[in-house]
Length: 300
Ligand SMILES: NC(=O)c1ccc[n+]([C@@H]2O[C@H](COP(=O)([O-])OP(=O)(O)OC[C@H]3O[C@@H](n4cnc5c(N)ncnc54)[C@H](OP(=O)(O)O)[C@@H]3O)[C@@H](O)[C@H]2O)c1
Image (cartoon, rainbow, N blue to C red; front, side, top):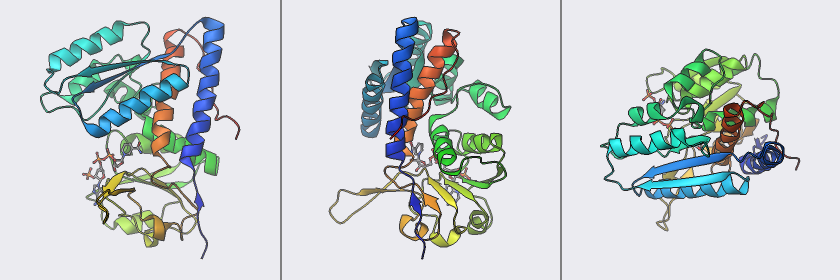
């Protein structure tokens, strides 16, 4: 049986970060401008600590300024909003990211809406979501943007492709569907109330799975030759107690049917931070009235 091409997101993301770094260096040389990314963490969520450390590290590696703010788990919403208000005003900060999840005393919607729309590098602000929906120029959420880049790199022109997006969250599923529609795909959004999920998936030339259910999508759910983007990050137990990460797609069976597939880890994950840096560069250019560069991944 045919075996799918493995889409190496880790390598693509590294090349994209190198492409971003080249533009950042150019921006500094031409305009004396250093894009700045501020990351705010409330509490000590272990996975979040790793994420924000990596975001800061990769921002600095790309030549950007990185600012990290940590508030205690008991911080009030007012304290967090005051910090965001300061960052909105700070000219050294072009992008603001508040790491989710937030402690329960803080309303995430109020926090997201407090971030200046032009500095919302996560693309979660309702105005940015609206701009994406109406085809305007806003900030696009990082994970779906990364998925789209991998798809375009693999397929080229996506027009006319039948795409199924599994999951309808505001951070992945909905913006992913909007991006695919913008690329002229015929898009279906499937979710927990969808009837005959396997049948819907089997029609897809492009399947993006973002459900958070370990290995839910089986090989026999796929159209032979389909391109499969697995957004899921799920930790499952292993006999040694360490656990391991798997996606929402059962890789072993899917790889026998798909034409191309992203692995977990090493697929979509690394693209998310790379696209965060891309959004920060975009935000910095827009805030200074400069043209937004078309960043290409550096050559291999
Ligand atoms: N790679 C990355 O950088 C990255 C970034 C973000 C998220 N993720 C991962 O991607 C996954 C999804 O994240 P998310 O934030 O979008 O999750 P989420 O907010 O929990 O949304 C999950 C979506 O999947 C649907 N769903 C759940 N169970 C289903 C089932 N049995 N059949 C069909 N649909 C089902 C839900 O449907 P309803 O709406 O009907 O409930 C919902 O729309 C998670 O594993 C997460 O860790 C990865």
